[in-house]
Image (cartoon, rainbow, N blue to C red):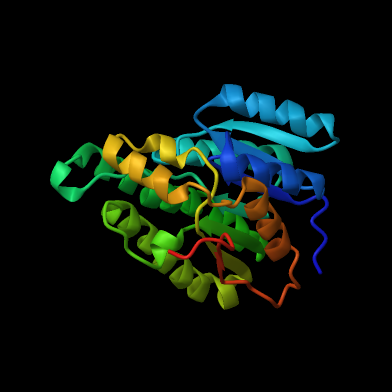
Length: 249
């Protein structure tokens, strides 16, 4: 089982939810965490919290949609630590709406963050992992990367893309470069994603569906990342479908 102490991780979307929880978990295991997001005030608070418990964190102001910003963020953490051992592509948006509402700006924003953001950060990190002939890339997909739900059509399309990209990436860099790839596909998680829904009808529907459901917490996903990262080197947990026990849909 690999010892994570002294390793370095880059986590996007680290200002809240799954990203912040995972940063705490990895830091507790001795990983220096590069916490990346656009909201640096939250990142500074998280950094203080991590350091108060003996961990190490580096704040990275980073917009995953911007190629130059992604490259600069990666360069900053590599300059500080010399390497990136783990990448967690976690930044994502879910502003749901029916297609006939034609919220095309939201469609484009989801494609930019949920797909292009993953591609941009992966492209910036991969050369370092290839040079080291080692690394582990985690991508956050969703139950929406396996199923399609009305009202979530574009979101589902972006998460299906991440599921496909993850598997193809695993095929291409696993044997050739000794880089593991894990696609995490959660069901309902207690995060800020529901706050992104601008359509009041759909927001109410999602809140009703989640009512009385004990959703997954960010810590549950953090534990999962930690578990997969600590698997023996010859083991790649390629896809992990994690659901609340009570979720039937």
